[in-house]
Amino acid sequence: MPTTTAAQSALECLVVGAGVAGLVAARALRDRGVRVTVLDKAPSPGGRLATRRTDAGAFDHGAQFLTVRDPRFGALVDGWRASGAVVPWFGDTLRGARGMSSITRHLADGLDLVLDARIERITRAPEAWILHAADGRAWTAPSLVITPPVPQSLALLDAGGVALPPSVRASLDGLTYDRCLAGLFAAPWPDGLPPHGVARVEGGALAWLASNRAKGISDGDAVTAHAHPAWSLAHWDDADAVVLAALGAEVSRALGGEARPVALKRWRYARPARSLDGVAVHRDGAATLVFAGDAFAADGGRIEAAALSGLEAAAAVA
Ligand SMILES: Cc1cc2nc3c(=O)[nH]c(=O)nc-3n(C[C@H](O)[C@H](O)[C@H](O)COP(=O)(O)OP(=O)(O)OC[C@H]3O[C@@H](n4cnc5c(N)ncnc54)[C@H](O)[C@@H]3O)c2cc1C
Image (tube, protein in one colour):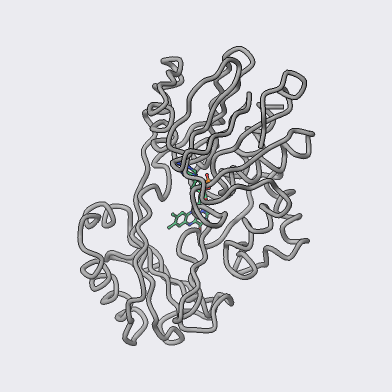
């Protein structure tokens, strides 16, 4: 656990969030000789790269695939491919080998990672930041990278009474996120979908329909159905059964067979509605705070944006 002894203080960093942004930042920091600890409230790393295993099969229920545009991300992805974490899917898309969480499991390997650590407050110490977990644990370091969706990150600072410079705060307050209701269904796939298992369904609630069996990550007929952002917002307060019935009817129609509901996942912060050009950095004496995540790179709301923000966050710290 990082401490704040004078000799070490320049070389210690805490990272909140073990999604792509936090893990890429942590690996880059480690490569620069920084002692880094990553904390996440979840029992496993991944964030919005999420693979759920059920009796009906395995579901990628968050991000579905990745594509590469920026050569810096391409270099990272080459490493993921070489390690076997990523394989080609269709067209120029790539997917996690055993589901998208293969990527974040690979990134987390060898890092100092504290799971089940729900941070509820961030406060200041002289020349350092203190993370306070809901269960009473605390971590201190002079540098901090925070990667949850921005409204959640700001809430942690507000709870600890940390005020940001007004210009920084104003740019962050303006970031909002689209929602996504994700229905998981047991459903036959071959008739309604092309061989790679993906369909963009026009005109109704659904934005995306994918067979996880055709994708190659599930033995069962596990189908992921993502609703459009506008539909997700309009139906956010509906009961799970109501949402699943509406999405299930569309899935059944598209596949030509009955879709049995397995679970509903609510992504309140699915993707930023708009993004900033780079990470937001706040330096106060020896204490450095960096906001990173998929809202902090051009063309945000993608795995690539999250990863690039992680690289940039590490460069801002060390
Ligand atoms: C339904 C859906 C479909 C998508 N499809 C694609 C796609 O096909 N291709 C693509 O490129 N992108 C896709 N995306 C976007 C992609 O998933 C994200 O851009 C990327 O995963 C974001 O990574 P991140 O590290 O910025 O944030 P996250 O993955 O959200 O990581 C933030 C982490 O912070 C943790 N955290 C939050 N609050 C706390 C706290 N208080 N204490 C401790 N930990 C905390 C969370 O548990 C989480 O692990 C999709 C997203 C969704 C939701």
